[in-house]
Structures are given as C-alpha cells and as structure tokens.
Amino acid sequence: MVCSTTGEHVVSLGEPSETTPLVQEAQEIVHVVGSAPEYAIPLLQEIQRRHRYLPQDLVEAVSRESQIPLSTLYGVATFYSQFRFKPQGTYLIRVCQGTACHVAGAELAAAVIRQELGIQEGETTPDQRFSLESVACLGCCSLAPVLMIGETIYAKLSIAKIKGILKEYHGSASAKEPSHVGS
Ligand code: FES
Image 1 (spheres, rainbow, N blue to C red):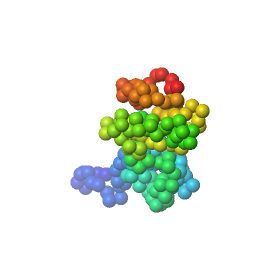
Image 2: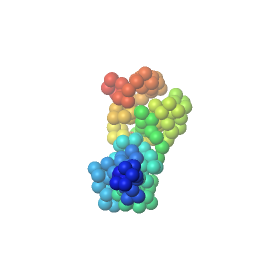
Image 3: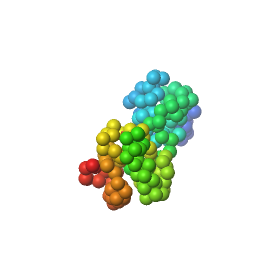
Image 4: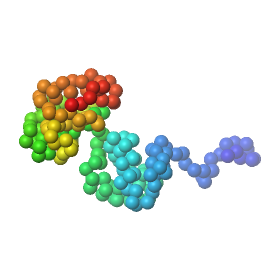
C-alpha cells in the first residue's frame, strides 16, 4: 500500500502473510481430498503418494489446514502399516514371509538381500535407492518364494536370481523398473 501523504510504500498490519510452499501444498492436499475427520486416511495417503513417506512438517500443516487434530492424524498413521515415517528409497523391495514362501526359503532370500544391500528390514540404503520390507503374503503362493519391487513380482527365487535382479536395479538410472518382466 502507498501512503497518500509521503508516497512511501508501507505494510499494513492487516495484510495477509506470505504463503509458504509447505502451506500451499497442505492447502492443495486438503482442497483435493477434503477436510472432514473421516478423510484422515485419504489425507495421509495423499501425503505419502507425493513424498513416499509422511514428512512431519507437512502432516502438521495438513492438520492445521484441515483442523483435524494432529493426534488424530498420527493415531491413524501409526495404526496402519501402510504409512511410513522415514523416507523410502526409489525401489521398495517387499520380501514375502508368508507360510508358503517361508517353507520355500524366504528367509534365505531375505538374508541374501540384506547382505547384498547392507540393510535390515525397515531400512533404506544410504544412496536412497532401495528400501526393504517383509510382507505377510503377496497373493501368489504357488510361485514361492517371491518378492515384489515396485509393481513387479519376482517368483521362484534363488540366490543367483536375487543377485541378478538387484544388479539390474543397480544399473537402472530411472525410478521405473527395468524393462524386463519379472518372473
Ligand atoms: S506366502 Fe508368499 S505369496 Fe503367499
């Protein structure tokens, strides 16, 4: 605003403060998903879809924008295993530890991956390329043991096969899976 007497620019105390990118993103998310308490899960899913985990500052900003208490959002986020609180690597490796896979040698498969990547389940490699998780069943028990990277299932795993798969992903520069079909 310009002072009519001096012609100088002055800032009125009533002017809205600048919207930060964080607040802007929180507003976008709430606008797209909704702000009612029953939207707590979709709001968290949208945050995670964008960032592959739940950044604390964004969850807090969404809480402010939606007026859903932070305790409610974190209560939901900690209840469901789909939500992550730490950044996830470009490639999420899910190793099935269901009964059929366990019997077929899933633990050995997981051990090979842990050794090759130097991480434990729930961790991400320092270069942010791979994260490792165990899951209960991937729904293709007849192909045990199996693992999943992104949307691709790899079946009837052997030590050599696992090493070959990881090598392919190490060589892949993009966030897409290598072009071959998992089998
Ligand atoms: S137990 Fe592994 S896919 Fe079902």
